[in-house]
Length: 183
Image (cartoon, rainbow, N blue to C red):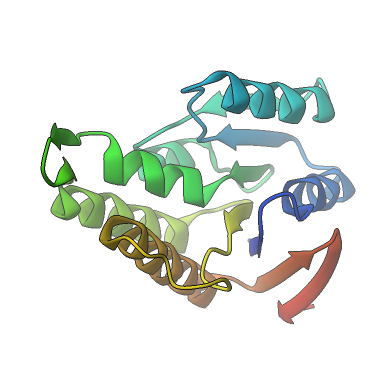
């Protein structure tokens, strides 16, 4: 079983690289998609990703319970492409948000912590290969708002926890992979 994390900035080529790695294995691929089409722009991104993937890949959409999804779908004979951890994080943090006029959304961080911990535990026990895609949001300036800083912090901590469990960690910039861990 090989666990791989591919991360980079927006439109860096990380998803395309993950798909190349998956194709090269010759294994059956399950594409685990975490995006929600909340607006026309995100719908266009989803369509672009769908059109690029081989038609014989199975696509499963999972916006929240990632631990159950990877545990159920992983076998010793297949490969899961999980795209993307950052969108899943956003789904978890803001799925039960209640909007308050003065402070914005009130988020349930304990629920996210339970989801994250369950996912990390499931990741440790998978029988099959997994390639995970995530955004690197911590290489720019520190966000101005508290909510944006919190999201950047949680994203960084999630990427660190996942990377610690992975055999391979690859940073993609301008379509070029830089292997940080493993070969």
